[in-house]
Length: 106
Image (cartoon, rainbow, N blue to C red; front, side, top):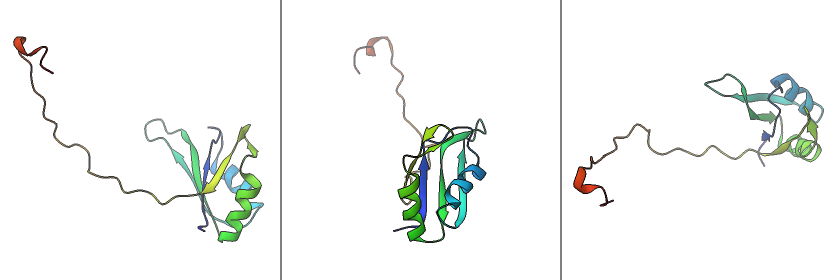
């Protein structure tokens, strides 16, 4: 089991310090990462916590999954590895311009 945890259903008022404090009661937190929206700068409602061992991570899951933080029931589970995204976006798309006689040919 990994020591990196996904934490979801966070209040938008939750800070990294809030997460750190909640998880520190169940072991040593080595990293806290609260994801922020690029456009608004506001939290996205989820983050990641890395505990110092898999055993501490399991204890944190058992203690905090479903518990309340900021008035919301947390979702805490083992973080899944990030999936590789295909492509790079920005690919060229082909569009056909329809003339008057082509209206019903799609």
